[in-house]
Image (cartoon, helix red, strand yellow):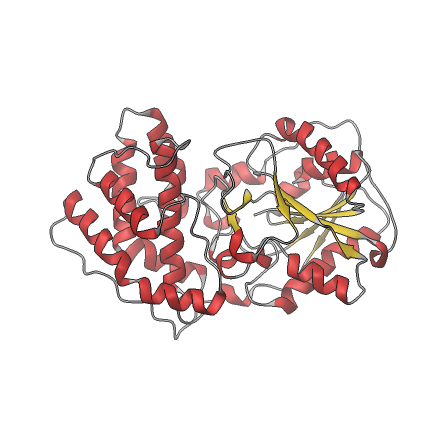
Length: 153
Length: 242
C-alpha cells in the first residue's frame, strides 16, 4: 500500500508541491444535468491496449482506448512504479471505470458512455501535452462527449 | 490531471478529476475534483467492489452539476476496506533461498521459481480472467530468462524489434512483478502491502531485482542507470529507504 505519507519525504514533497503551468484563464464549462451527459474517461495512467506501443518515457501524446476493448487487453505502462498496481490487475475499474459508467448509463443516471476513451502518461510536462490535449478535445466533440472524468494513478 | 482539465475546459468540455494527492490538487486547482483517501494507483477504490466504485464515480460526476466554480474540491469519506491485511491469506510456496548468494545462484533460483508459481497464477487467471503481463511482449518464462541473464551480467540483446535492451529489461521486470503479484493473490484477498512484502522480501524475483538494480546502478551505461534507479524497485522497497 502506498499513500503519500509512505513515500520517501523528498518524493512526497515533490508530488504534493507539483505545480500547474501559470494559466491566465480559469475555464469553467457548465452543461446539462447528468442524465443528459455523454461521458468519456481520460486517464493519466499510461494505459495502452495490449499489442500497441507502450509509453516509453514522458511521451506527451495519448493512446486511444476503443469502447469495445476487453478488460484483459488493457495494460498500464506508466513510468512510475511507486503506486499500487494490484488493484488494477484484479479489476480494471479501479483505474478505468468503464463498467461503472455503463452501469450508470443503463440506470439512466448519465445519458450515455463515449465510444472511445483515452490515456496520457501523467508524469509528462503538461506544457508538452497541451497540443495533444487540444486535439483530443476535437475528437471528444466528434463523439458528442459533454463530460470527461479525469482519472489519475 | 489539472492541466488536462484546464485545456479541455478551455476547449468547451466539462471535466471532473479524481484527486489522490490533495495538496497537489490544492496547488493546481482543476475546475472540479473529488479527493479520495485511497492508496496511489486506486483512484476508484478497491477492486471487485462495484458498489464502492459506483459511489466514488457518482460523487465525482455530481460535481458537474454543482455551481460556484471553478476550483471545487470535494472529499470522499469512505476508505478502502481492501487496504487492511487479510489475516487468513497465505502466499504460495517459493523456491528456497540458497546459501550461495552469487548472481548465478540468484538467476537460477528465479528461473526455477517462475514455473513453481504457475499453478497459483492459473488460479488467479481463473478467478479474474485477466492479467497485466504483456508490456515486454514476451511469455513469462522468456521474461524470467531475460531478467535472469541480466542478473548473470550477460547484458543480452533485445529480442524485440524497436525495443532497446534496457527498455526491454524495464518491461520484462514489470512483467515479472505482475506475474508474482497475480500469483501471490491466486487465493484470498491480500492487501497490496502484504503482496509487496512477499514479493520483495521472500521471493527469488524480489532478491534478483534488488541485485539487478544494484548492479545496473554501478554500470557506466547512463540509460541502464536510469532504468535501474527509477523503474525496478519502488521507492518504499529500496533497501535502506526510510
